[in-house]
Image 1: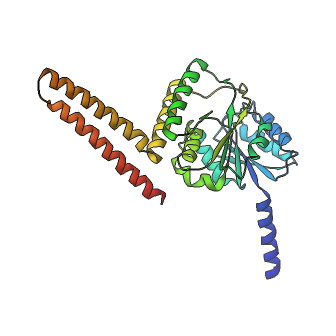
Image 2: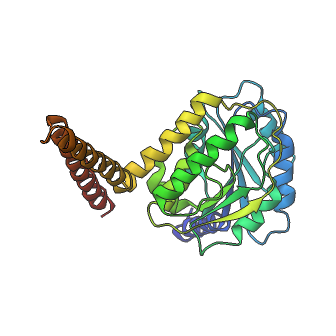
Length: 310
C-alpha cells in the first residue's frame, strides 16, 4: 500500500473514532432476565438523537449467559455498535465500570445499570447539559430497591454528611445513572473501589475537585431479577466511602471539627477540674494536646493534598 493510501486509511479510521461521541456503559453481572430489554430500550431511546454512540457491556464473569445474550442481540442490531467485554473473574461493579471507562471510545460516557431500574429515555436529558458540566447525574424520585426500611434512613444520613463535607447539595449520592466526560474521569479512577460504592466515589471525586456537577430528576423502577445489595456490608462501605474520599481531597473538613470537639471538651473538663480540685489535671492537658495534634495533622494533610493537585 502506498504512503498516501496508508494516510487515507488512517484518516478514515480516525474520523470513525471521532464520530463515536457517546459510549453507553452497562456493567452487568448475572443480568440475563433484563439485559436484552435494557439494550432494546437504549437503542430505541437514542434512535432520534443527533449524535453517534456505541453500547459497551462489561460482563463481570456472569454465570447465567449474560454475555452470550448481549452478543446475540448485537448480531441482530444494525442501529449501533454493541461491544461486550468479558471479565475473566468477578471483581465487583466498580471494577467493571473502571474497565468500561478505560475501554470506551466516546468523549462522554453514560453509565446505567443493566437491571432495568433506570429509564433509558432519560439519557437524552442528561446529555443536553454538556459541555457545560463535567458530570450529570440522574436523581431518583423514589426508592424502589430492597430493604427500603434500611436504605432510606441510611442514605439520608450519609447524604447529609456528604453535603456537609463537600459543601454541595447532593439530591442523590449513589445513583447508578450518570453521564460524564471521559477525560475528566480518567484521573480519578484510582480512587474508585471495586464494590458497590463506586458510583458514590465518582460523584464525590468530581465534587471535591472542582468539577461542575448537576442533577436531573429521573424515574426509578423496580429492578428485573434478584438484587445483589447486602444491607449491612454495603451500607458500611457506603459510609466509609464518603469519609475516605473527603479525607483524600478535603481533609480539613474532617480534622477541624474533630479538633474543635476535642478542644471544646478539654475546656469543659478543665473548668470542671478547676471548680472541684483547684488545678488542671493530666487528662485535661492530654485532651488539649490531642486537639492541637489533630489540627496539625489536618493542616499537614491539606498541604499534601494541595501539593498532589499541582
